[in-house]
Length: 434
Image 1: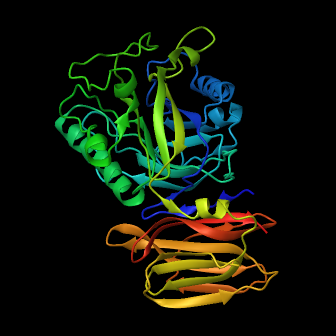
Image 2 (image 1 turned 90 degrees about the vertical axis):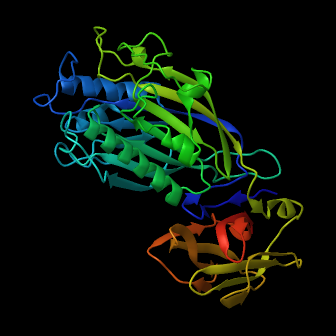
Image 3 (image 1 turned 180 degrees about the vertical axis):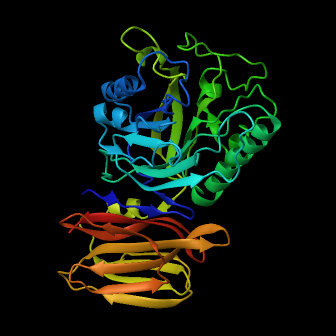
């Protein structure tokens, strides 16, 4: 018998299965120096279009799982022309219209948002020339667990790309601190309980006491991969500038990769490196004025979510015989009774109940789950269950932010995973063969 777990609407975002297999992935962040040549040469030899072509081909050659780029403005098309990643964000425009932030991935991602900084400063340059800011995306991976439970849809991690205000003038420091705090606050609202990676150009250094890079550790519980793996867990207090290309990992740049685990997945950084030697022109010159950095991560199933899978794994052929959803303003409770009498019920008893009794040849095949804001947090507001015959049961209040989970052909929904109290805080759906 095998089971699969669908998308999980968390109390702040959409996360994934706690029962995925162990595995690994890698990331890269790179400021690609894509400002128009007339505005900024970046002290990089050669033609910017040719260099951007080379960057794209390098992205394809090394096939990083997730790439965040910054300053991807007027030479964006040249990068994408030679890159082959199947999932890539569309440009938001060149100078002065775009943010310069883009993402390239080997796996599908969704819920991509661009957020402009609330504060910027031109004290040391032209940071207000373009709508710099950060992006947020949720990325799905498909990994398998070859044990009693086989997960076909698995791990979700929230990814943030950013390019903070540059410079060291007082107004720059104020703006940059506001930038990083804006991301940290966004994580607190939209990624509660989720695994998170923040990687990009922070324009911050630990050795500058006025920089606010520590907000990710103190407010969000993120770990800097460079501090953890290269500096022995100790944030530096003395400046150590890097050459480009850098010949040592010990020096510090403003480009960072930070992470934390979540309720459904445990992450661990295992490798960190300046990738400078991989991103050079044929004559050995640099392609950009930033050292690109990479990190590798292993992942393992999280352990903090409750789920029905262990009980389901003991059954030979579970089938939903009746299902109930309860709600009023939000989703209060869910339950499913199997044909053998086993019942899985989660959440509270508030709201109005809607129940369907399923025929012997009728299966629960689809669930629409909507989320919305409540007291500054994202909560489950609505659930609509649809059977193989088209009958429905719904509860709660629908919103504009919904996700449809459809059982694969020949499969059915038979249980749940998530977190609950007097309402359903997190919810995913467990599939089994019909």
